[in-house]
Image 1 (tube, rainbow, N blue to C red):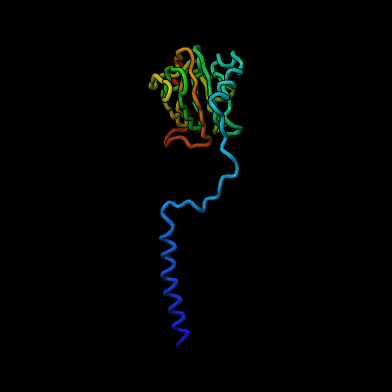
Image 2 (image 1 turned 90 degrees about the horizontal axis):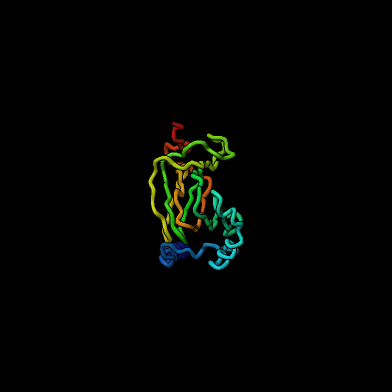
Length: 194
């Protein structure tokens, strides 16, 4: 009998303590998440500008522009480009975030790349992460004037092109690799050669 009473009291006590412990932990409690092991990568605006100032001017004036990596292996750069011919490009399996920090221009997104394709990648490429470029631009698509504070998200397979740069433009470019294209999109489309 005493044993039955002890078991009953134990079950009752356990029944009151468990809900109290559960209630003490609030929804969204992240107290069990381990702390970060290293500081977050950081590059000050002054360091970015100093590094961009050291980029070879011919590279900045090229069709890809010059860039400074924010951190090794992060797929994040600050890119500077100037007025002149620009590649139209599509990333087969990357999402690309562009945040304009200085200058302005016109970016065309969507449409189709105009042949000829001038990349070392064979088109259509068997590399699922291929970058495909055209020196001729994009046919169709939506042209938007972009300026500081604007954000563009180029989805996998979406052609994009700075068709005009108003002197100079700088932007943060972040790429997320190995993303499947939207349903029904197998590769970037090319405009007809007519």
